[in-house]
Image (cartoon, rainbow, N blue to C red; front, top):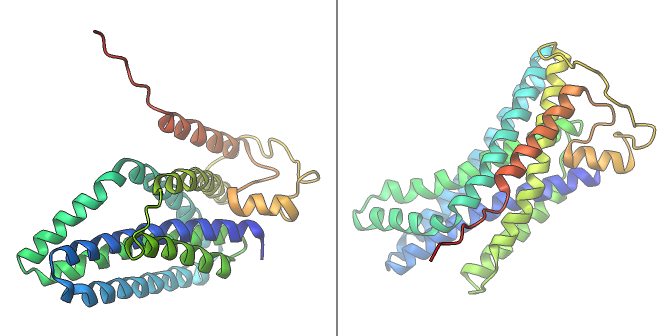
Length: 275
């Protein structure tokens, strides 16, 4: 198993599981504070059902790509890669902007559902929250697998899930104060590099379909120095979408994406007030 695939799988599963675990933990905490612990089993079972629904969505996605003909498969793979890039990017920015409001917003929605006796809402809220994270995980892992000959790392996923679940347990059961902001910040940077690789790979597939001209192909070929199919090159390909012989459009897309994202992620400067 390629180490890059292990790292990419670990990072994606860790990030998504942590988000889902925090959401479920906030819901359970709000219900407990309202003295309505009888709803605990409903939240737990709703979350479990969402996980299984995500797995079913993953199997459907796998069957669609495996049963497709060559050109259709390339279209699907290009679409998955580019869409995954877009959602990964949105996810990182959304978490950076909304992280402080998630707890208060969820607590308000839970309180409204409990006080008004809306049983369906109490069950639906954790289901939709967990299913969203699970569906994103399925999409992202499929996109990673496309770059790695259909392979993702089982142990990378298990270890990412275990670490995220452990952190959530320490927060909500152990009462530990864990600085989550650095987790999301640094994993966000790595995820954006993964997203840039997915964008470039999606464009590569569109080249092969003849939908986008490569302009110059390749711009360079350094596979004799750092081969994308073995060793460090294989690791970088699995994790960040490294290509030893990219087209000009791939290079421009990769570089433009990172430049634009870096501009939006730059530290905001505060203007000193005049006295």
